[in-house]
Image 1 (cartoon, rainbow, N blue to C red):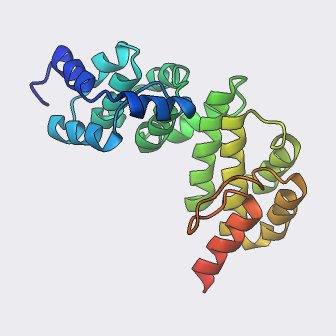
Image 2: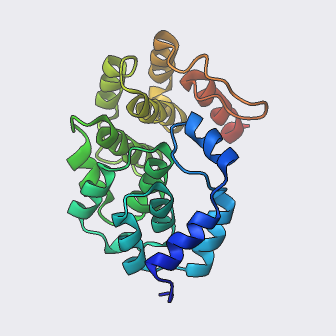
Length: 222
């Protein structure tokens, strides 16, 4: 645990504010103006500090919450605390870091995946699909993959953006890691055309499921 106070942490975050960075981030829906590499340097110095992380999260400020997610101890949150936090993660970067740095490192991940899967809040359901993708890739025992494909086929095209992205990730991973279902995953992706026109930088893998599946399978089997 560090000796850093909330006031000191907030002052340090305020010093990182860059108007040009804020303008660029706001185009992506994020309300902060920090260089994230510099934020990570602050977190590295502070180290894990659950009490400070809890206090920073309570401020409601995006910059403070991003630092909180880097210095918290994921295993110390209860399921209800994680549920409440997820429902407040509207800024994209806060949501991304919360799901990937906290929920996926919590021993409560599977409990929360089941709890969130049919939630009416698309942000919450998206987190459940992200956790499902981890299961698909690493431990699919007990998952009904055919049923997941049925749900994706039915809902992917019209799902809200964040939920659509997570469902698409599950679709691609089913195609990548489960050869017996690859043809169906590819067919669904080709027919729905979700993210087919997503701008992809040279050298990066497209999020369009058929392209994503094909590229990763080639790498794994090449």
